Image 1 (tube, rainbow, N blue to C red):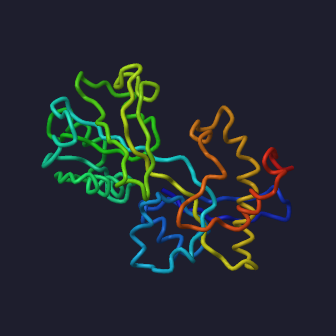
Image 2: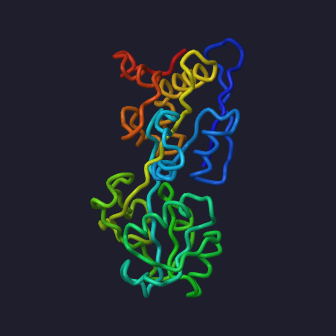
Length: 275
């Protein structure tokens, strides 16, 4: 997870520096955006905002969103003897190290499923080796598919993903999703689809005063990013960029005004990169 500091360079309209800042995870990104000097924007999982409803009652007035990014899919990977979610009750399940998306969103999702498991928070690569030996029953990833660990590792027959059906208990923060053979050809039979859910990821900005320099910096970032999205969606970049829809809304939050104004201009619908 990252926060971003936006730095203008010179007077040329095409020059902009975006400095990534690596943080400890989902909630720390929100903390950094709210309280860390120099942070203008942050990439945040939507369910992480739930932590702040009581802590920062006016958070909706302090944060605005720029766009909805590609989601992070839930992967529940289990040993051969585990046949259903119910089989995981009381078993050892790893959610990766504290601060990661899996360590935050995974237990929340399991709570909504009503599953009480023996939670572990160790590096996934360590847990996967323990899983092969039978010491761990499942690992939970919350990240954009496909995951290298499931593509590059060799798994004995019976290791598999469990399905999680989307229903009303996930409607507030999550989206329906699935895993199939195009994602994991050695783990999902061709033609089959494993239901799952996904955690939306959003690009947030601090709600700076409109006449401030920080506001203008973020406005420049919006213009650079929105007008160049077609480049990011072209070959050579992560295919996930093709799933980004500039017009997708984030319920409960206001869009950063320059982003909305960019979208409201009819000529931007087919506009290529600005010169």
